[in-house]
Image (cartoon, rainbow, N blue to C red):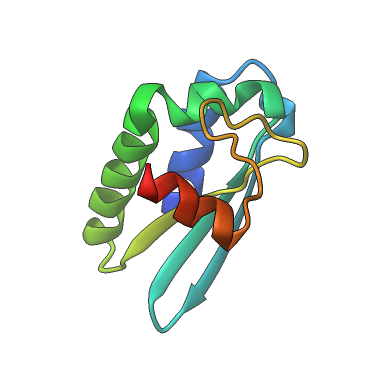
Length: 104
């Protein structure tokens, strides 16, 4: 396992309650390294954090780890199936409905 993937695994498993459900895949292409993180749906809040602060910190730390090994490391966090996006619920609206709301 590569250093960046091992680092992310250790940090994430320390943060979540369901550490056995942590899955990290690593892909390399011309853009650099992409680490894709999947966790138990109940642990998403612990990984994202308030206003996304934990996710931002994880990405920053991974960039530092990548710089040490001359690689650009990015983190993608998979949203679980049936995930709850609090505050982001929206209904489907027609163009006419949106135009009517803008005219108010």
